[in-house]
Amino acid sequence: MRVYEEMGRLIQDRWVKYNHDEEAFPELAARVLQEMAPYKGFDPMVPIEWLFSTRAFPRQLTARSDFGQPPITVFSDHRIVIDLYYWLDGTTEIHQHGFSGAFQVVKGGSIHGQYRWNERHRVNGRMAFGDLSLESLNELKEGDVQQILPGNRYIHSLFHLDRPSVTCVVRTLHTPNAGVQYSYKKPFLAIDSTYEDVQTNRILQSLTFLRDSPRAVRKRLLSELIERSDIHTCYLLFKRLLEIYKEETALEEFWEVAIRRHGSLAEQLIPVFQERIRQSMLVSRRAQVKTEEHRYFLALLLNIDGAESLLGLVRQRYPHEDPREKVMRWVEELSKPTDEVGSGDTLGIPLDETALIIFRELLHGRSEAGVMGRLKEVYGADETEREAASIAEMVSALRASPVFRPLFAR
Ligand SMILES: [Fe+2]
Image 1 (cartoon, rainbow, N blue to C red):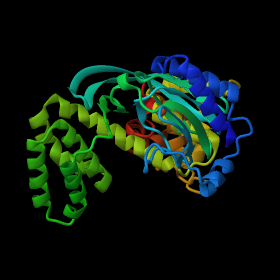
Image 2: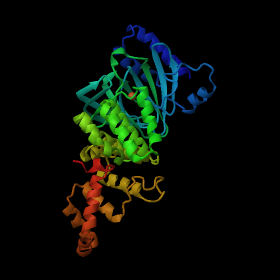
Image 3: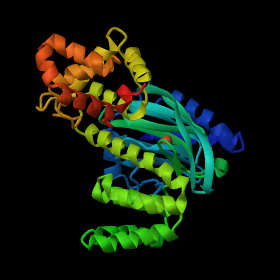
Image 4: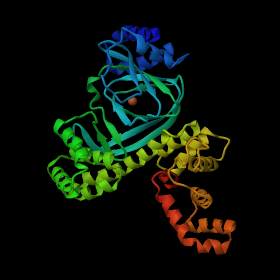
């Protein structure tokens, strides 16, 4: 653990020469990470052994934190912190930072997305509506270093490909002009998810209790709450309802009152929640997917919105293979109803032989008529015509499927 102590001292020595200017910190931290290279010979068990036995445990950032599995502060003074973040299945939300720093991947690897935010409507200091767009998506490997610029100059998310993935973060305790540490919810929302209002928290907790009460009572209470609340509370309420009921339908009866009260702001929350449902479907599957290639495919489905850019990334990673065939192989492997690939119908959509043929044609951008033409070649004209209705149904089901949307969106 000496390397972190040495890194801490080195940063202290160098930063004081910049009068502790936060603007100078990301570059300085990145250079120290490159020089000291904590990734070299990193053994994930060493910090864990130390955690169990040390009697000089540094002050931690927070007593409780769900960012990291676990997060461990390995060095801290009054200005800087060095953290290790372990990840097994974690996917970080899209977020910005209230500090300056840099990180190095010390174990495993991740898909790293960087985003740009264009604010359209500021609600208050803790919530805003705007457009979030993906600027770049690349892979981070062991030894790679990224600077963390404070505030919305660096908005990112990580999807960890390996179990475990570990990053070493060197950061300021706080950078005063960094502003709120926003989380971003695709496609339209920025929110300070650390904000807590005690009464709202209690109301949200009571929803579990209200689950067993008559529906009319619940509906009245929640509708009245939306009527007299701000849009932030409205968002938290919908989020909690989705956590409890796990169905979009649980929100449906409240959109009308929310839109009446908050107009277009509430309307913009609808796609935010649709995307949230889609993401949690993918993230929950991610835990069952153990091979790196399949994890990579899920990361693409999570992060990429259009077929061309998705296939472009597959081409980049596997330059000697046809990207559409590669995707088809993943889809076939993940939709197998067996445990052969260690996942078993992982995509939640059982795809039989015919469905896979349809899938391949759609992936090539063919129309419904094109799909029919191909099926006639395989099954003959008569049989295909007889099944025309169910084929059309499968075509629309695949196109509308939240999981596969990025593959069929042009
Ligand atoms: Fe981050």
